Amino acid sequence: MSTATPADWQVRPAPRTAEEWIARAAAVAAVLATDAAARERAGAPPHEEVGLLKDSGLVTLLGPAEHGGGGQDWTTAYRVIREIAKADGSLGQLLGYHYLWNWAARLVGTREQWEHVEAEAARNRWFFGGAVNPRDRDVVVTEDGDDLVFTGRKSFSTGSRVSDVTVLEGVLEGTDQHVFAIVPSDSAGLTFHDDWDNIGQRLTESGSVTIDGVRTPWSSAAGYVDKEFRPRVYNTLNVPTIQLVFVSFYLGIAADALETAATYTRTRTRPWLHGGHDRAVDEPYVVDTYGLAEPA
Image 1: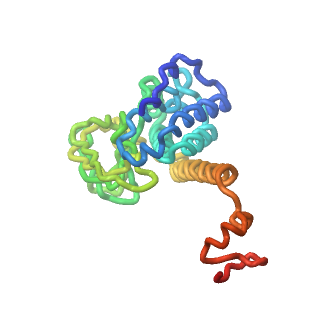
Image 2: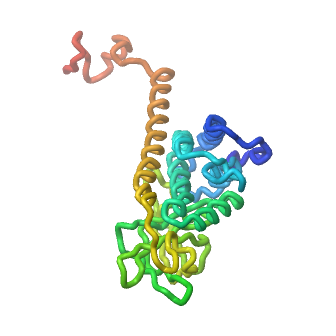
Image 3: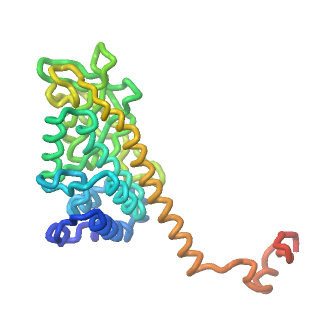
């Protein structure tokens, strides 16, 4: 879309406060809203729209300030998701999942791992996708020396076709241990299928993915030290974090639908009861004084 990347985003002063970030999100949403319906009909991968999220700084909202991130918390992130979802539900969902996967290393990994991932993500403005469903066992992870090899298929991989990095998840062969790792989205063996065509959230790029021997070092296995997982209580915040992501973009979609309907009603319609007798007699039914329809 031609208006998706205003040239001056990157030269504007970066927001510093939560309210400034919400204002930035509202400005981005105003750009996205201009042709959201047309983009939904076209169904093309939202590369330019993700570029806008990067140029505006929204992708680095949760990143450490010392590495170029916004240094904000999840309260602000949820509000930003709602603002974007008001303009485009698909982009709201993509941004929400991005925040979740950007935070995945902190939720599951060691301090050394999450500090490294968050610094690199902020410096390079990574956009995250994820091929994760820890309730299934459709991806097997095998050991090969100092590497792990992921093989299988996921039914959903939200955001991955427009992402820089993808969070993978699978079950370590011969165990019941799940392994999470972040890999480049252009890794050999990753094939994202163009099979997502769902009305309403068509641009979330949530199609299936084939994972055919994708290799990553053991050191990238989140939360593992010397090939043993080190659980933390913080791991349990994974589920409420993603559920609130869903709540946020649902609320954004609902809020805009309500406002759009209210604006339409105020500016383009009038109550049928007060439309006048001439209009009423042209209808197959009239309304009596109690507001009950009966045959004319």
